[in-house]
Image 1 (spheres, rainbow, N blue to C red):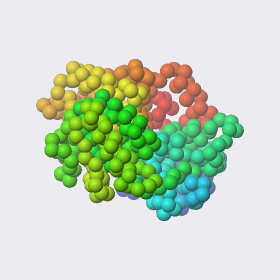
Image 2: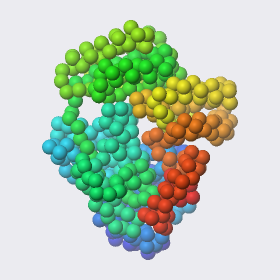
Image 3: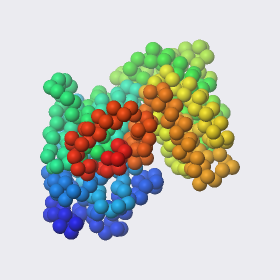
Image 4: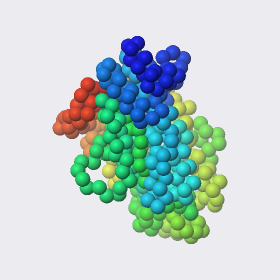
Length: 471
């Protein structure tokens, strides 16, 4: 493969073809430390033309390519296997904001731009890019697109697919599809854009995107609300939608066990309640107008809900500092989980109306299967996406607990499938859930997905071992 390395060095420059073990190391281990891979080289192109030339060279040499953005995948989707025969293609140098159109409310960006930079560029134009994630300071647009990222504002603005107007994609053979169209309406055939969003780098390399922007809210109102359980939270969601309409931007759910874990592991996290409630919801409204009026609307909605018996207690943030403190609790979940120990993670989605029943049925099922198991349940209640994480019984070692992992996960996923839900709502399949796909997808659906894969990537070089079993 010396010839290929030389060719790649000629395309991107020798300093951007990493072959030494110490230089490659940060690119070969996933963010959670679950997967460790190896690579022939890590290649860092600086433009779409360079990506195209790299892809043409790798296809010619029949060398697999693993695309990588901010390397924050929670499913091992951007980590190569251990064979050392693949190229890791990092888009970190492709980090330009190409254009901002304040009138059309769009922004054109390189795929390697960090999400927070897109948010900042939108803000400077007096607009909003609403995707909001815990990893927004390091994740990139390309990765957000590859996994069809969601986050806390999906309830109002939608997932990444709904926030995207056009794409630029380098195909496996090096050809470039220029789909960077800033059109809100385009009824001229298949929606090719949607094939690549959520494809986890298995069909091509996304190198650029046209994203939607929105008016920047001038007012926000945030409340932490204590409720009895998920069923009460769902009724509160319904009443909040009725009273607040599309001002309802976020509706985040956390169980008491999750809150206890956060307070135990994160000393700077504080709840605005005298005691830990059975469950809680973090609500945020946003609008154009006066903040006082929005806070009054939220206060009135919660007062009505309390009168109906849906709310046990509530605290409305009095200023931005208090709102940040409320959000600090929600944003601490991932770090608290890491500190608590290795969890069995399930990023699932079910129809919104079934969430409470799912949680009750599943808690009973996993508790019967493994007494003492500790469900840590939280997530985006308004769009049906829960993070159903399970911690070991306190008397059990982590090694023994994870020996039960496949059996417990099978219970969870069987229930999800029975409800026609999804085993991956926003984190992607990656290599973590690939083997589960035949158990959760109908044969025809997998057949159609494989047909698309063969049509676009006939040699099976794009991110092998991810998303589709056997691909």
